[in-house]
Image (tube, rainbow, N blue to C red; front, top):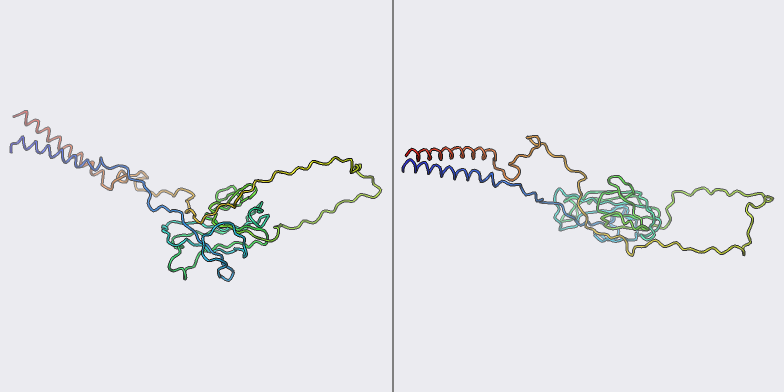
Length: 307
């Protein structure tokens, strides 16, 4: 092989090496940000237990709706329904809240006042399965009302007490159709007497001496024009009770997690954007190959001119 043919072969080889070295750099693009293993909604089951620990009424159920209590549901056990795939990091808040009301059912509940609330967080360990007989289930317990009341079981950890700060929500109020709590699983109403904060002492009515003239001249009853009777418009009444569902959302973080410190001061290296290859090393190698290839081409050109 002549010297010129040898130099041309070196030039072609250098060009091929350059393309092969530069290809990984050109192909490295932004990594896919698709999430995997995201937490999905889950189905909650519950049952009421008495002071002796025995089940009161139906066993595990996801039945919703507004129920009239025979026994006040002061303690409720909760779990996640069987045959669900729940990630190890997923949490599901479930709360039980007690309110005093103005009546014994939703339609007469009127103004409600929160009395007590409890919250637990269900995880993959709370999914029903083969070891149910020996499993200790999480439970929610609130004060038992001694007057008209409503007890709500719902799938979040918000306190619906009428507060406006973070973690608080509006009180349930039937006349204005405020159907909180959200994510309501089931509710119970009952009671047999009005809720009072105490009976005020009667204020004595002052009496006038018998000889004192009446403060206002009396008007004959037959001369008083009849007052027009007016009936205030009735408040709109919803046709049904608030909706319920045993499917509850997972706990959402209240704030973004603190980013982890990185060795380069927080600037993400190029290698983390789409490839684990040492991009800096490849780029340096590509530059060396370009220099060698250029030199080979230059020498080939001088050989042709001198021949």
